Length: 501
Image 1 (cartoon, rainbow, N blue to C red):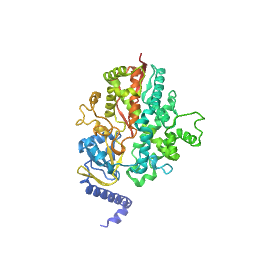
Image 2: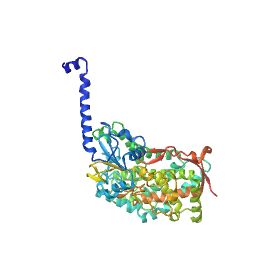
Image 3: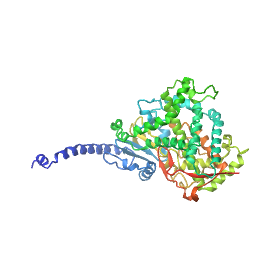
Image 4: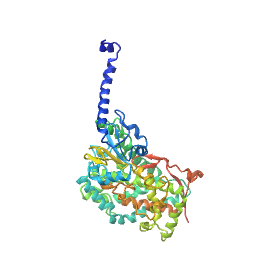
């Protein structure tokens, strides 16, 4: 029987012509997977075309942790046409961030990042594709001007002043409900604004502005982790089928607008109205010949990285301390013993071991970036006995490492005492505990974040008693997470301050 005439008679020809290319693509896809799977790290078998996209879920850090339990601490997944390798143990993290750091320190750059826009500068500290000379210069400049010990010490009075303004605001809000994360966000934003541009950007009394700005920053983080067809199938990246790039551009423009006018005024020599001021970071950028586009990019990276991570860490810390009043009282007693004249100063912070232990335990349970920003293999290399092909996206699941029962005793419990009398820190030397990363791509702002998180948390605890609204019991505090580039509480922490006598 002639099949083709039969197909024509039954109108099946269009369907057959449609199915044949799809079957061919599926066959090639399965053949390619079968030929490479033996040398790749283990992982769930990928579906044709879409790969393992369905395995990622809405909270990839949790789903990947579950997959690691089934397939091992180094696993591979296919996301569309792209290959992803994920490490979920201290040993694998050390392989990625130390042993093979040179080959794996390139950056996988999502299509949504501002760096990929043709009208923006390609100079980036976070999203530089490789650790080249420009990236090294930028890191060195930021370290010298912002993050070196001398710079941090010089900034201390400024941080103390802004935190005092936060305390004064809370005194006025006594016995009223406060959104902890928004208040801390505004305080940190003003700290950074003063260090970078000598500007106080947010009025703590204007809750609408605070919430709006925090919402914009979070929206950018959320868009950055939204599954993007353009990342999974690069051939489609220019089409922006989901409109994610357009939405990201709108957020970037709204955030950048708040400092662009000050950059123009400074460049034109019209910013201070004859008022003397201290030299700031913008002066250094202008002296080094940075363009407005380059300054915009760098400030966007510094503001977004510095505000969201610090505010979420402090919110999580307060939530855990409210749930664990014994630890709250230990920190209070420590502060009472060490603080002189009832003024919290940065110079006191090194003498507060229980406060430091509580911050470390918070970072272990609730790392600000649960999946370290994606690295990329600049060349094919071996991890353990497996092959990581060139251009593979590589990530470390810090969240999974922090909750690994083979690494931590009672990993799901808030137990700050595990860090007392311990040399374990988060400076990238011990791969059991790397909330800020390690190797070439370690967070450069760690020294500044360390100071502002401890100072703000110390003031919140020392000056105020805190209670939950509506007669809630501490055990009722919701600790569910909201996934973005950073890890936030799904429901904001609402607390009522009362000034301590």
